[in-house]
Image (cartoon, rainbow, N blue to C red; front, side, top):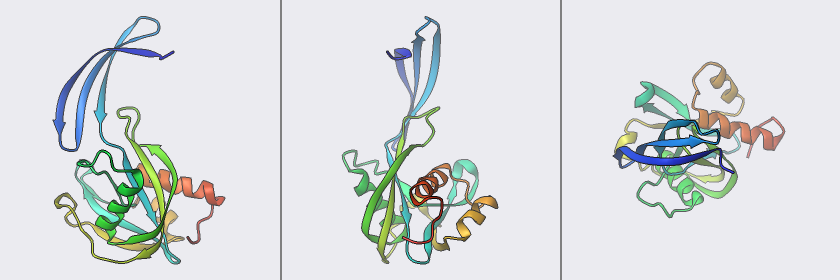
Length: 184
């Protein structure tokens, strides 16, 4: 049985990237509550790997007010029927310019399930071939750079990588590899 039953839902705000709704609900014990829910399409996060390390992107993140390093990630807002792998391949090409010979699904994570049901599909991309970036206007100033495997944990410890999705994706890779990453 569900722990809560939604009694009403109203749209509060909407733009091309997200919707914000307010749901009223009743708990199993009869008490009432309210949730603010952010609806966003599922996304893909890609761990581009070659012999030397990962390829990360750094970009300005407006809500956090700064530039941050992370794995390439995003959604295809205008293509709701795209498969997670199609989203991953497109985001990889747009943000890094790379195409991947192999795109392997590693798992998935929830972005912030305290306020959204959005899921992120995690992919490992190998057999990378360089090409031109195709950045969206919102990604102006995004840079892509190689990061040696041994440098990644130091960047996390120094607070240069703080993106929860990037950290969760890296953790999935560590779990798969037995806690050591040294190549594709």
